[in-house]
Amino acid sequence: MSIISAPSARSGRGTPPAASPDVPRRRHRRRGRDIALFLLLAGPNIALLAVFVYRPLLQSLQYSLLQWNVGSPIARFVGAGNYLAWLTDPSTPRVLLTTAVFTVCTVAGGMALGLWLALVLDRRLPGHTIVRTVSFAPYVLSGVAVGLLWLFIFDPRYGVLAALLNAIGLPSPDWYNSQPWPLVMLIIVYIWKNVGYVALIYLAGLQAVPHEVREAAALDGATRGQTTRRVIIPLLGHTTFFLSITTLLSSLQSFDLIQAMTRGGPVGSTTTLMYEIYQVGFVDGRAGYASAVATVLFAILLAITIVQLIVMERKVNL
Image (tube, rainbow, N blue to C red; front, top):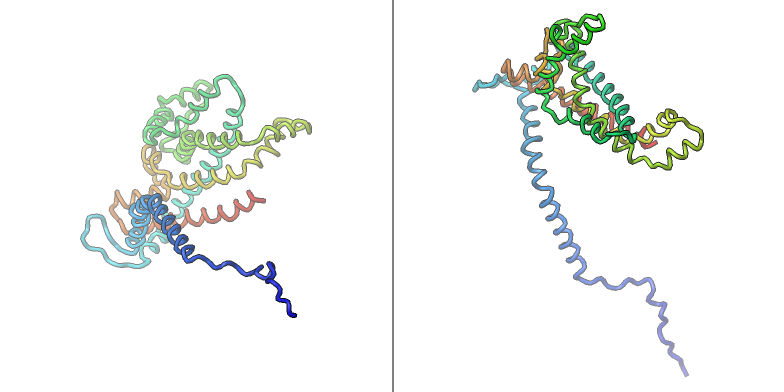
């Protein structure tokens, strides 16, 4: 007598159930909804960037290859001629040096002073809220208004600074005409205007530091200064990384203070790359040449940003 055994329950293990034909359709519909939602939310921003950022950038690259003056109906293709003309211009080394000095001094000075101010404002002092507001206020003011105000302060004859220097027996420098004082004046005003922004970002980073970290450092016998140098500042690495990029890009593109205070003078001593683009393009009308200088500035900004992203991010993530 033969015995026929029932199929084991384990015999079906490992065999996946047949996929429902509706599963791929649901996935396809879900993906379509995700794409439609993305285009709905990001589409307007992408369109604005394409029209007002990328399109002018591409047009600037095109114009940099042309010899074209503003208002002229004729444009002649010169290839790299505008770039060669800028590289061989005797004033180019001076403009690059001025740009480098202005950028390094404003970025380093602004970040150092902003960090110090943030450390002061982080303490629970009487009226600290008002002091924070007053410190940030110059950042939102018009650059032209700030420049005109400080011109009266720096006036070597009747300015407030001249009166203070004369009160202690010191003469006032000729901030307007005697080099290097015009550039020094611009650096001081730029730092004063933007230090509130740096302090505000650093203050947000300080308030994100856990109190347990400071208490642990105090229990180990660290002084306030040692805690700041060896504990707090290293923990602000991401904040410093962010500020180094934003302040550097802002400094390289500074224009309003230079236009209001010195207009690139005297004798071009305060002319930066950004101001040279304005001077050549809108005053002299050499649109092709100005586009070439703008492209050079864009390349410098892009290269510096990439270096910062690679080098500083590695240090932050160590």
